[in-house]
Image 1 (cartoon, one colour):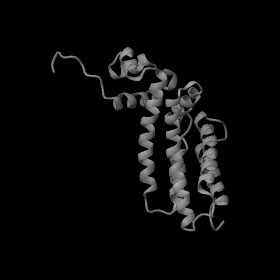
Image 2 (cartoon, helix red, strand yellow):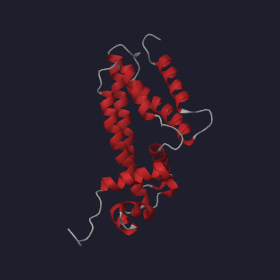
Image 3 (cartoon, one colour):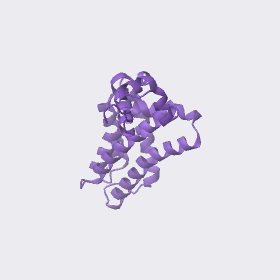
Image 4 (tube, helix red, strand yellow):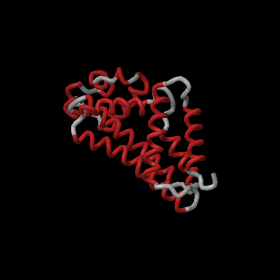
Length: 199
């Protein structure tokens, strides 16, 4: 209404703006004051909603993971072979390159988790659990269809995700010699050697 008090933007709009700021300017430029200017709110108003920068970062990561989870669900629901869908999972998991905003945020949230409370740790575990459950189900399907060797899906998924995390961190921080294409090649070679039934 004209002359009325401006309504606060919806929470998703604030989280999207935070993610966009990370992508465009880097995590160090994401402050409550800068984000407030971006969305037309005071930093005090943002603190009322998010309590702390740690909570803002975790909420932004959860928002980003929700979008990735929906995309992962679409990829895994395709009628492709289990291996083709596993390659799609890996493609989605590995960062696009140096400074990938999702991975930049993920690394920061996990670094801050040393001092996180139980609720924050549970929420972080839920993020990891969703990726793990989907991977376990996909590997189990591949084993049941005879595409994959008869591995323990949970154990194999845990090891594969550890490999993906290590490589992904290298890509996200721009470690020399670990660009995305090279990492995807390493992972596909590992899967060929360790998982394919006809290897």
